[in-house]
Length: 238
Image (cartoon, rainbow, N blue to C red; front, side, top):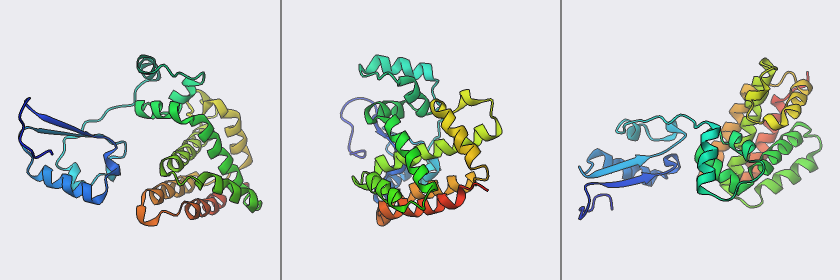
C-alpha cells in the first residue's frame, strides 16, 4: 500500500508501533521500501528497544529520541482520555517508567497484581527446594500461553532487581524506587540475600524475555523453569 499512487493529500504517513516486534519477513519488506522510498511517503517507527531493529533499517532512518514523560504529565493525559482511573494510579504510573502506552496498558491489565505475581515467582525460585510450590507457580504463569503477559511479568522482575541494586548502594533513596510501595519487601530481600549476583540475575531474566520472543523456541514452561534454576544460583545468602 505504501507504494500505491497518492490520489489526495501531499503525503502518505504510516506509523508502525513496537517496530521491534516485526517478523523477519516484514522487516525485509520494509527494508526494500526504505532502499527506494517514494517521495510522498513518511514512515514512523516507534520502539523502546532500538537495538532490536535491523541495523540496515536503523541506518536508513532518522532517529528521534523521546525522553520518558514526567508522572504528572502522564496523569494529565490519562485523565483527559480515559474515565477509568483506579485508586492506585500513582503506583501504576511509576511502574510505567514514563511510557504513556505502558501506563494505559497497565490500567487495563491490573499491573500491580502481575507485579505481585512476579515477586511471588521470585520467592518460589529462591526456595527451589519446595519444588511443588514452584511448579504450581510456573504452571499458573504459563497456563494461558499469553506471550505478552509472561513478558510483562519478567519486566516487573527486572524492575525488582533494579530497585534492589539501587537500594543496596543508596539505602536512603527509596523515593526514587520503581516499586517504592513495597520498599520494605525490597529491604528484606536485600538483607536476606546480601551476596546476590544482580548482574547475572538481570542477564538471565533478559535472556528469558528473548526466548519468549522467539517463535521457534516457545516453550514457556521450560523457559520459566530454566530461569528459576538460574535465579536460585544467583540469589545467595552467604
